Length: 70
Image (tube, rainbow, N blue to C red; front, side, top):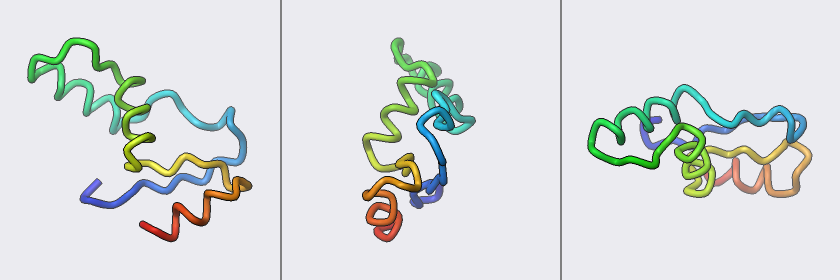
């Protein structure tokens, strides 16, 4: 991610994935480091909550606010 937030442009909640290639890579790396409960879905939820990914749908009032801060 190189220090940049991933800004997605989802139209509906159904478009938002449970995992991504990045979350799968993070999960694999953490498991290699000895972590146990770190599947790709858990990693993606962390990425969303930490602001690494902007998954607000485009009609959400927060979408532009969050995108402008990245």
